[in-house]
Length: 120
Image 1 (cartoon, rainbow, N blue to C red):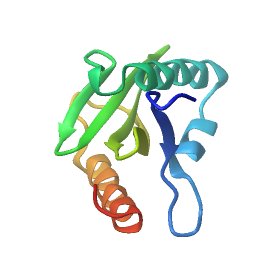
Image 2 (cartoon, rainbow, N blue to C red):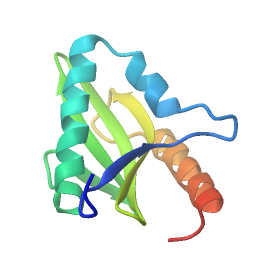
Image 3 (spheres, rainbow, N blue to C red):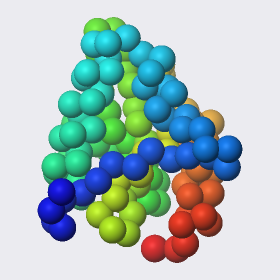
């Protein structure tokens, strides 16, 4: 990996579990492949990525958007020092607007990550 390339990081909780990886593993192969492609596109485009691939949620939180068959998936992420894209939450979207409770989970994990890693 060159110095200019971005890396992907999956949030881990205080017990070492990675809820985003667990979410991805719960999906069928086609959805996993589709989201894997989207993650790679985001890694390549990073802060230049635009809709429909990504959408800004609030503050530093963004959502990676992907559809597979009849399902809509979202991976909430933020950009961090050292050219890192940190994924903090993944969910299957069932409503028009992103549910507040999903954003709240992402916000809590963002805060925990910043507390552990240090401020940007």
